[in-house]
Every structure is written in C-alpha cells, then in structure tokens.
Image (tube, rainbow, N blue to C red; front, side):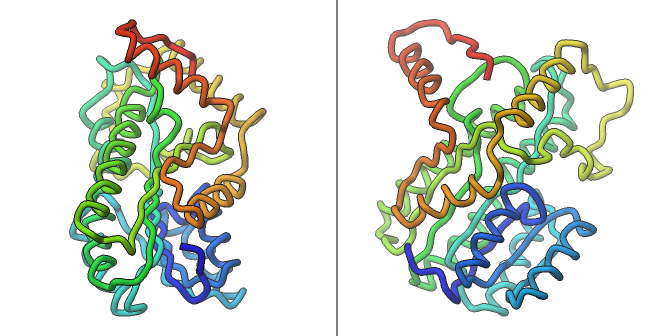
Length: 284
C-alpha cells in the first residue's frame, strides 16, 4: 500500500508515544484519523490540535481489553468513514516483577491490553476491511522483547511474543483465504522515548493490586531504572519509529525491526534454539 491521501487510519493508543507519532505521520500524508485511547484527558486536546490543523479526526475513549467496546467503535467508524485502510493495534502497557510474584491483576492488565487488545482490534475491524475490498494494512505493535528473552518484565515479554505469533498467523491466513488486498506487519521496536515505564497511570481501578500484593524488590527497581537509562540515552524517537513503520507498509515488509543493533541478539536466540542450547540472558 503506497497511497494514503484521504484514506482512514485507526490507531489504538493514539494519544501518546508511538501511537501519536503514527497519527502525525498519517496526518502529514493526508489521512483521516481515528484515535483511540483509554486516557481521555490526553486524547481530547490532541484531537483538537489535529482538527486545528485541518485534519479530519474521530477521537474515542476506549478500553481495548473490552471486545464489545471495540465492536461498537468499529460500527461507529464505518458509519463515519465507510472504510478503514490502516489499522494500528498499538496500545500497550508494561510491568515489572518476577514470574512467580506477578499477581493475577498484573496478568489481566498486561495481557488484556497487549494481547487481547490486538485480538479485539483484529476481530472488530479486519472482517470489515475484508468485506470492503480496498487495499489495506494491519500493523500490530509488539517489541524486540517479542523476539528475544531475558530476565525481568515477564508478563510484558510473554505478551509481546504472543503478538508476534498472532501477527504471523494473521499474515498467513490473509494470504491463505485469498484476501490479497490486505497485508499485515508486526512492529518490534527496542528502546523508544515513550512513557511505557509509567503505564500504570492509566491502569483501571478494577485491576489494581492490593498494596500487600506488590512485591517489587531492589533488583526489579534496578532493572526498571536501567531500562529508563537506555531509553533516555540511546532511545529512538517515536517519530523515527513511525517513519520506519510507514516505510514497511509501502514495501509490504512484515517484520519491522527498527533497531538494527538488536538483530544479532535475535540471531543468538535462534542459534540456541536450533542448537538445543539453554537460552542465554542477553540483558535486553
């Protein structure tokens, strides 16, 4: 897909970070925007800014974990625009903690947004995109953490590996069932200057941890601080990630690895897997 003017882009997590950068890139290309986010206070002024620039924007507060909300939104989007051409299942959150100390609420929160949110976006929009017959592209945001493993952020890593596999299956099935007008990609960025480390700020009350259930020790705090240092010192901007994503869409490239310096780590994991070796912690 290489024609974007007057086409429609749906972006979850569209009020900040990579989602907002994707929206800016789409707007510069003359697209209509559907911005979806759970953070209404941030979303509303951003939508107003786009409108002030002459961009046609539909902005809706949504919890991507809720399939019924996403289905209702898809109906509203198609009533407004009658088509969707780019679907960015981008909303994502993070968490820290050991595997055995992560709480059920932590799992519900991270897997609900990072995995079920992508599933719900696909289920709500892709059947309509198939029926519409117009060229389109689906981009699911995973992470370099979906291609390698290491210590820390267990739930986040599990969720992002799930998104990679889900995206691969989506790509296979679009081709298998003859929906050649649609293509899929998986976005796997590494250190990016976003607010992923503070995503608990929008965590709904129904899946908050009780204070006594939170067990974040010095090692986990140190890992979080180290990750933030990497982001601050070497992280790419969301705008760089958005530009790479649109380049991949134009060239129908499935794997979008935005940080080439991490490719050797992916190769190490594949080598260990194929060689029957124990996995190495590469500190990523």
